[in-house]
Amino acid sequence: MRSSNPVFSRRGFSRDNGHASFNAAPQAGAATAGTNPFAQGTAANPYATNPYAQGTQPGAPAPARTDAMTIDDVVTRTAMTLGLVVVAAAIAWWTMPVDEGNLGTAYGVAIGAALIGFVLSLVNSFKRRPSPPLILLYAAFEGVFLGIVSNIVSVYVAPGAAMQAVLGTMAVFAGVLIAYRTGLIRVTRRFYGFVMAAAIGFMLLMMVNLLFAVFGGGDGLGFRSGTLGIIFGIVAIVIGACILALNFKQVEDGIAYGAPREEAWLAAFGLTVTLVWIYIEMLRLVAILSGDD
Image 1 (cartoon, rainbow, N blue to C red):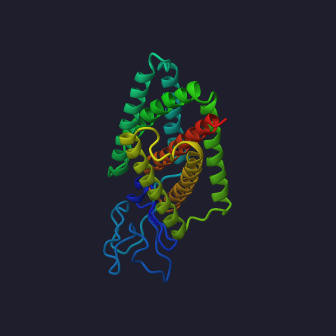
Image 2 (spheres, rainbow, N blue to C red):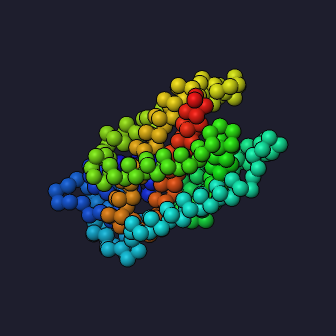
Image 3 (cartoon, rainbow, N blue to C red):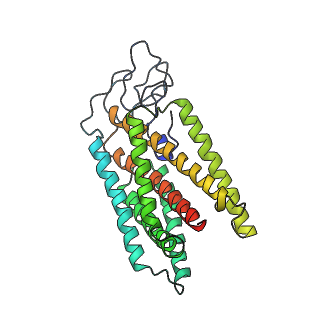
C-alpha cells in the first residue's frame, strides 16, 4: 500500500498484502511478486531488488542492518522539525507587526514564506535521498507563515485562536495515535483508497473555490466561510487525521522492516506536513466559529 504522502510512497514505505517493504523476507508459501519492491530479486519478480542490501546474491535474504531506523530516530527528528516550526512561528509572531500600517507587509511576507515552503516541500518529496537541511528549511519557512497568519487571526478575528488551534491539533494527534495503537483504526488497502479519494477530491474542490475567489472576488463558492466553511473545515481535519494514521503505519513499517536511519528525516518531514495541515484547518475553523458568534 502506497502512502498518500509522496515522501513515503517513493521510499519503500509500502505494504501490499500485509508485507512491508524494507528488508522483509517473504513468508513461506507467500507470493513474491507485488509484495515487496525492496526484497531480493527473483525470477517471479525481477524488479524486486533491495537498494539497501549491499553485497547479497539475488534471492538471498537481506542482512541485518546496523544503521536501521528506530522509533527514537523518528521522535528525535520530528521533535527537531516541529520545534523549528514553533521557534520560527514565535519569532515571526513577535517581530512582524500586524497593525493597520503593516498588515499588507505582513500578508506579503506570509504569502512569500508559504510559497517557499511549498516549493521546498515538493523538492523534499521528490529528492532521491532525504536532505536534513532542506527539511529544516521547510520547517523554518512554514513556521514563519504560521506565526504571521496565527497572529493576524488572533488580533483581528479571534483572540486566543492560535492556542485553541494548537490544542486541537494536539488532541487530534493524540486521538489518532491512541486509536491506531489500540486497533480502532486499521490501515487497510480499502482505508488507503478511501483517504486518497477524499484527499484528492477535497483538494480539487478547494482549487476550484480558489479560482472563483481570485477571478470573482469574495470567498469564491463559499466553501471557506459560514456554514459551508465549518463543514468543509471539519472534513479537512478528518482527512488530515486519516493521513496521520497512514503516516503512523508507514513509520511502523519502516521501523519493523529495517529502513535506513536517514529515512527518519523523511518520516519526520511527512508527519510535520500533516500536522501543519491539521493546524491550519483548526485555525481556520476557530476563526469561522468565532466570526459566527
